[in-house]
Length: 302
Image 1 (cartoon, rainbow, N blue to C red):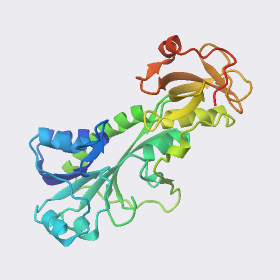
Image 2 (image 1 turned 180 degrees about the vertical axis):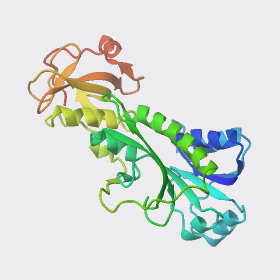
Image 3 (image 1 turned 120 degrees about the vertical axis):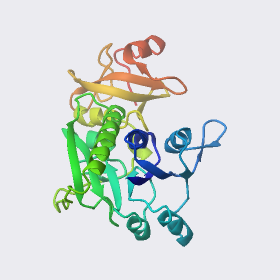
């Protein structure tokens, strides 16, 4: 099929690769404009733009698709279908209507649960047992369109957003190829009106650990915000990112280190920290981290 691909972050890259490998004609790749990044704050292309250019595909990165000129340029590509995954811009109705077979979105949740910007983070933070990927026919509402295909996966007890991200990205790449191959046979299934939840964009203010919360909530926060933006606490006046954890036995005053694991007391129960990161340093497993920064029993984490 003649496809327009629309995506921006690393999550979208395996999907682009899968479309090319399957022999689809990618007429153009749309991605968000390059953004300042790194210490020099030089404009850096998105992961999708970088991959598309490496594949020799034409890339467009308009700041908006609301203007008539951009909409006409999009329609002029005469695509059979647009495949959209974590693109980051709202598609006006004229864009949604332009491809002959419409626009298909790859969404990393079991719709209608976790519509919106951060479905992977929110699923882990909420303690969901499972999530998945839906292939959805796009319409004007926020992730409200009918579902063409869906597949679920279990969320591991120690799984982080980073690990789940990679699994769902690969699943989305496989499902969209199946969906395009069976498009004539697929029947759109309207989303249920009950069970709707919204995955709001992660606010950095959510990232500081509140040790007075129950351990199960602290554990979900740490895993749900790993690797980005990273839950954090303070030790000895230094900010420490917490990037991996599991539930542990023990009790004590909230935020107090209970043993050499290290396990940390919460409002109810305790968590064991598995992966940590000091400012300006690489992330480390707990044993390696503690060789460089001791957290002896009785240390109060803030």
